[in-house]
Length: 122
Image (cartoon, rainbow, N blue to C red; front, side, top):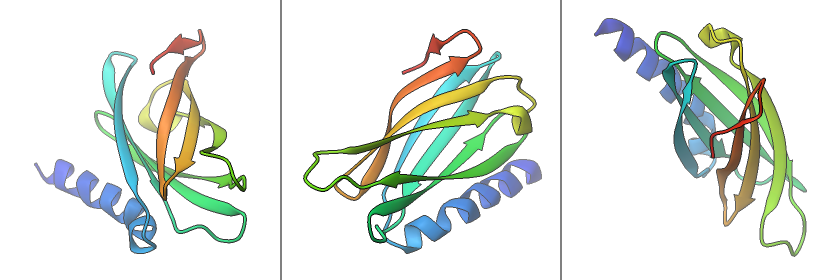
């Protein structure tokens, strides 16, 4: 139980900066290597022509954070970026290939592939 509480606190701390800046988060869970991997992506407030994205990844026994950015395209319904995230910190020899979409002040995972093998997850 202590481990769960510690991991939950770590995840909350990793997304707190985006939330404090008015960000909106989305949550997904993907099956990877026989275990669920929870992914949370949060958008910070836009700064100039880009928006900072904070990502947190939680596996069965570990978690980690990753940062990305999306360039805002004026007049576009959504702005997108591709982000490849190695899952080695979770003890998994896979990479998540994510397409992130920023619209209406929030970010979401539009597509997810598991590499190697290009296995579609979303």
